[in-house]
Image 1 (spheres, protein in one colour):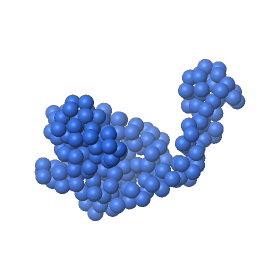
Image 2 (cartoon, protein in one colour):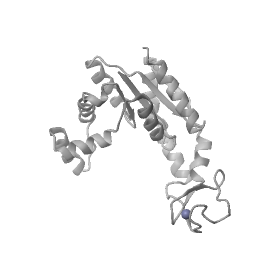
Image 3 (cartoon, protein in one colour):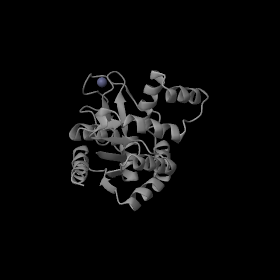
Image 4 (cartoon, protein in one colour):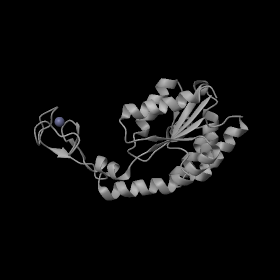
Length: 220
Ligand SMILES: [Zn+2]
């Protein structure tokens, strides 16, 4: 069973990579957010408990999330393995996840950290904008429209920027991520399962690097 954890800051392409891995290795991408919504919709015991907590504006406890993941991975579609991205987020969750896996005689196969250069990342995000009419994406440095101020796709001349695509917000997000993730990275490094991938390469190259790591873990 292949158990892969993807780590990377917002904007690192983690979600896109998780989807590609899921297809390439025939393993399931698990999202704790989706699981939670499914449990709530199914009105399971865990779902009903979670609903009360969420409605009270509190965070669902790690125990509840781990129990949900434990139950989810028993499903048939997880028999070849699964990928987690966006979870675990804290050291406590990391330890709890590890304990849960151990109790099932399972272990994380590899943890892949998509490493990005903060300066380039800020440039990448802060420069993006899109066409108001058709939502086509542009970048003021890397992907300009063919004719200045005119959308290549629909000919529109009005563009917008997402409010949180500004330098301060991006910087804060990257710092938050680093503070939050550092202990998790240290934990997996000690276990000897951590691999780093240069996230500043093209999406295709990052995919190839990740696939190579997962393949290597195949025979283990
Ligand atoms: Zn357009």
